[in-house]
Length: 312
Image (cartoon, rainbow, N blue to C red; front, top):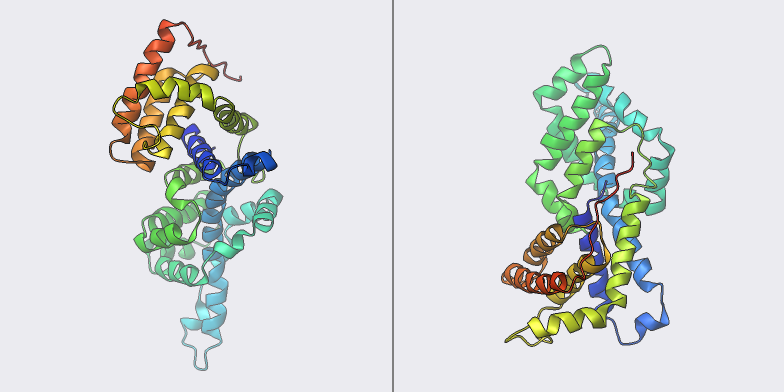
């Protein structure tokens, strides 16, 4: 469910953390990089689960709203007839019956990231929509309608809400890095939510790629810098942005030690990451250096690529 680009970002961030530590700290704890990377990978998927949790809590708020309005000193007829249908939405109850979802929420303490104020705002806004009124006025529970109202809540009330997205950006660690991935995960979730294991959202293959890339970049640092430094014409390696150097090392390691990743894909990916996470000139810089080194490596017959074998 997580893309290779998101994995590259997590590896880059982990390497940056390691590079900026005090000398010798990594030597004291050989598993430090693994621990940091695992935490970043897991947190990236936490945002997906938190988004689902917001949908559930908003639907459940209907019961709280009904109780509060009915408890007024002088409740109106409308106060006494607040629909709680959405709180019993079968789509969200199927999620809640997934034991791995409950365990994920508990283990990662994700309830902590849900704002009660925003839940109330979302429910209040949802309650005023035509789509919601149509939903509660239907006597039966149609599976398509049950899912549709939850998808409407996510896409139209949450994802399109600039205030909420700003709140997520400020309060959810990593949202800026993963705000493009989370909607894609949510889209897949609405297409097929029945078989998700929320405790294993990253495939063994993707996790292995992440750790192999990180460890290879660490192990091959000296060799990669031998390739890079001659290309830094009019550039002092110590003055080049650290992020750029890390991205160069990552790209070179993919060239040389990850045979199923095409070189064109590698170059394009690291150009984009440079633009996003480094300086305005980084994309052009990374493109030029990686392309020049690749030509020399191909000339020396050091690039050995192979077709990726897809699992049937």
